[in-house]
Length: 421
Image 1 (spheres, helix red, strand yellow):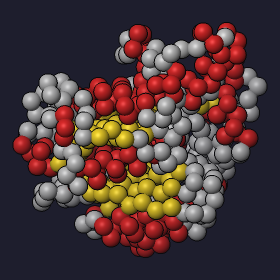
Image 2: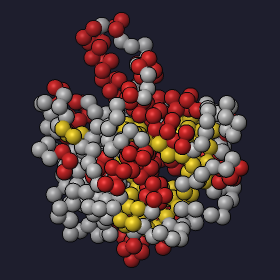
Image 3: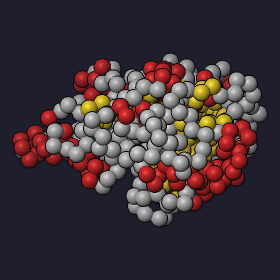
Image 4: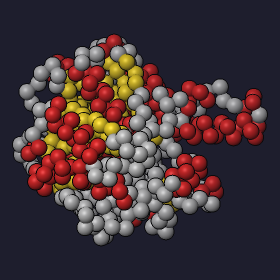
């Protein structure tokens, strides 16, 4: 790596997902091709058209003390767990100001959520109706506000360079990472904790997604329900959890002797301006984000050997993404192994970009592409080198790069690029 003042690196990784309570167990589950989708056994799910979801493998209450948990929405709990792992993984022994290698005024936090504290909002409304005004928690507003996860992570590490919450539906987590890269490149921060989180397993969001025909209703086969690129795909499976990373200027990381996972090459962003829900079917908007990424960053298509696809398992979205990549990369796309990890984790909405950034970084670190599971009958229009069924080794030598694609309702497109150092 030829480090400059603009070079950004990743020095810490953390996650809590349907496959494991930390990044290591999540990675093990991804490489093994294990599904985290389960049947919803709760009474509230009995009358719903969708009764499956990808629950977090480890309940946040196992690591967050009950007095603190009562003041945090579940989405913020997940974010805090992932951030703590990433912070420790980066080699920091204490919060900024207490650790001599971190200056609070040079530390930022950008943690996104697509929906925010929706379970707090709905549960406290039930309390208001059923038990009266005086029983509503005084912590309700700080818990439900969309910036709560980012604010609590910022408080945890003592971030003072800026604490931000981009909200762009299912692209939110990746947009947070992209924003963090720009915070460092523009000189506003030396270190930024960034990622995404979501916790929306509640009857209202489930019913709403189901009624708009966005979710799989394959209740009889939970683990086989999320099947990106399969000809019989019929919607996503809702997941929950968080993925958070620590980004740092290469110079700051070098000064403190930090271990580096990869270079954060940059981001590409665009908007479809096509429909509030449906993706632009030709992939033109996604292609523009990819072109923006390539034009603004020193990245050779020949370096890109892996892509973590957004691939939610919807009929239009999966193909639009592949069409966009073919438009931009042409024949170079044939050597890019494509993994759709939502087939195992489900779709974490605003948390997806964070968790899939973690998966992309670990794929580079271990030089292994996780598989896409549940493809029994590949769509003949799925034009790409899709990693199916079992993990695939990536080139063992030389510098390689990988992309993480994230797209959201409203036509938000974000592509992140990472590269080995």
